[in-house]
Length: 77
Image (tube, rainbow, N blue to C red):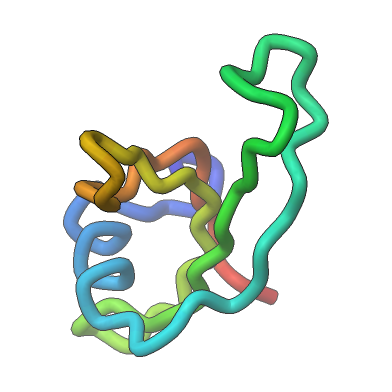
């Protein structure tokens, strides 16, 4: 975020304004919680029109998706 001059508000607005998940990736981290963990990419604009690419995972509790845990974000190309 810092390298691309994004604020936390830019990223939060982008995630809240997203209408769909851009793509789903299988996690390659050896520290992942389960062998079938996926990361989700959201590509959407902030209120200022900045296109933000964010990657995160959905946290499930009691079988329901509760929130999006942000891993990284940058300006979309």
